[in-house]
Image (cartoon, rainbow, N blue to C red):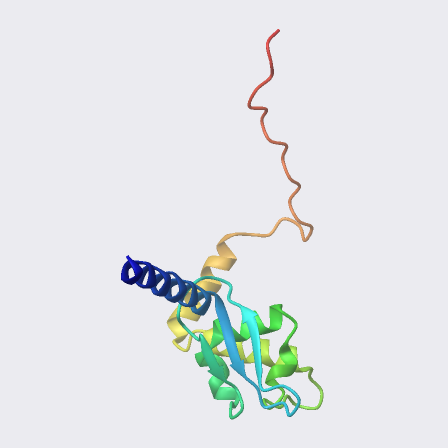
Length: 142
């Protein structure tokens, strides 16, 4: 009976650690005051569970796009200060620009198709569309 209880306890704790690993980014920082940082992921998965950003450059940002977006959403962009932006740009703008450049199509035919599609759908106005009220589901008994 003790063996079964111990096995159950080990499985329970191991499952909890696995769930925690799939829900958190553990970041090794280059900051002298803090060694690691922890932020929740935007969705469960084992991609970028442990990330060492101490030696990152601009090229590394494109390879970890979801992680960089999550760091900027969480307001922890100071963790990526070793990726130096130009003097005229903030760090967040620089990171988002790198992500945008990495996700832009390199083939001119894809870019041409995208511009043709955007020309087909004319924009009637710059203001957002008004929300339509939802139809009532239940009106009650009369």
